[in-house]
Image 1 (tube, one colour):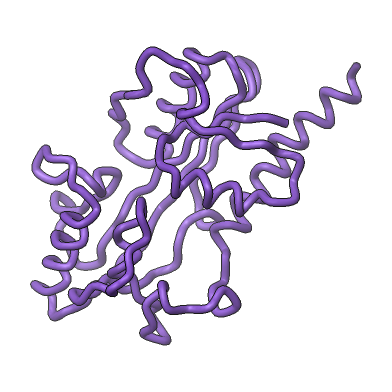
Image 2 (cartoon, one colour):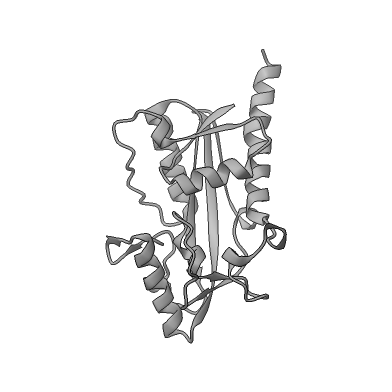
Length: 210
């Protein structure tokens, strides 16, 4: 089944393709479809609201099955008004580049002794058609607590700048240095189960009804 991922971020697109490898799902990105404007005003107060806003709007514009994801970053010990939340890349009204994000969040860690505890809350909204809309935000697709440190790794993961500051809480290893076998891909497994249940489950039901 072919489905549109509501993003222009190539790194996110390739990451989701890897997560869903082996399933009967072909993922295309916004760069593969022609729409007048791929910019959407994300006015939600949490990841799920933003994921739903994007998915519904991209479906309205393309009329093909679409899903959108959104994330919020939450830092332990930071006042609520200073929490990045869904505005991870936007600071004081400015959209930060990858390097600016590394500098900004590394600075927050520096102000707090060199490291801070953080976690991502992730959400997804899948629009198959007007009558079949599925959404989820929860621990199965969200991260465990990890450390953001003030000293960035020398490597960069384009599209995921905070990977250069992210350290596994127990081993104190940068995630960029960890082998795949050391990483428990809870988030990837959670997304995979979501698609198996809702997209492939819907598709199988539709085929049986013919």
